[in-house]
Image 1 (tube, rainbow, N blue to C red):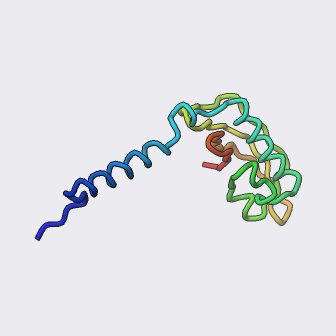
Image 2: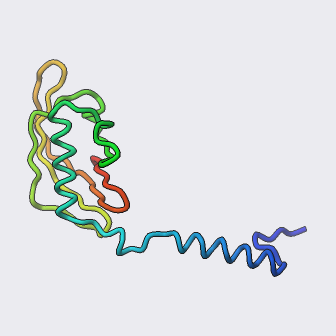
Image 3: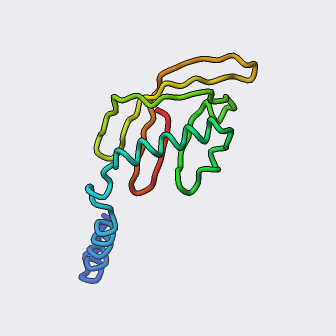
Length: 128
């Protein structure tokens, strides 16, 4: 006995076709997902400023959805600099950033990291 994923009846084929059209029709086009570079840089700066100002990740929602493991782990951001050599992959802007963070004991460390920022369909900022 074999089972078909698409029913052989005309009604079943119609239902399968409607499901396919609904799925394809509801997908955003590639042009809608293109990253807006100035908006992405601004979102990254707002994200990092919120961390520096002592805010929590949830304070940024719903305008910016993001994450950074050092922020989540309680490190304090002392300073940051968005660096100029970004990489645009079409849907995301990869922004290099120089961070200065401080741990609970007051020890500072500097590092260069990359944030992946999307502006469509939502503004997201996540550390790579």
